[in-house]
Length: 114
Length: 118
Image (cartoon, each protein chain N blue to C red):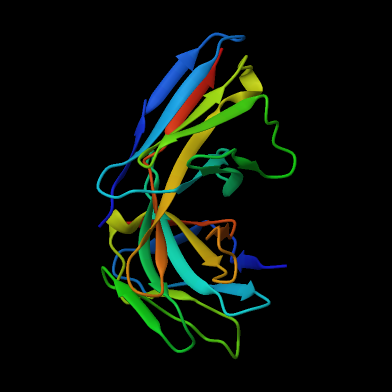
């Protein structure tokens, strides 16, 4: 079945450091891939997405490239800020599933120190 | 982007009482909505798919009689936690998909409802 695996956190960085959060997936078809962010006490917000191989999703300085050959969708940011502290979830949906269910990874907590 | 709201944002209740949580799509119609449960520092667990005009579809292990779902209209789904107990305390999140381009639907999430059962 479909699944998503994320690197375990927490990830602790200093402000302006480079961020990478690894995400790999297993899917029988051609899934769409997403990164969601959850700030403390809030619900999930869509950060970026990619729907086919080699697509690059980007938003707020974050980027992730859909790599079919390595079944990965790693999240990167060149210079993190304290305000980026949150939990990041990688997720996939299978277009063949008409219900559009999302399958989530376990989440990675990011803490950025001033 | 599309907006999904939830009400209430937090609720405290006594054990044995029932609690209703509303999920609304504010600027789009949603024939399907999803209900998730999130425990502290854990990922989201899909509980059920709410279908407008028909019965909800529950994930394995989720008690249908415990978590009643009603999709009353194209913009409203409700989750009722019946006879709540302390172990039902959790963060409940709903989501609704909407078409963002010709080929793709994207899910938008509500801000969540924190339930504490005493």
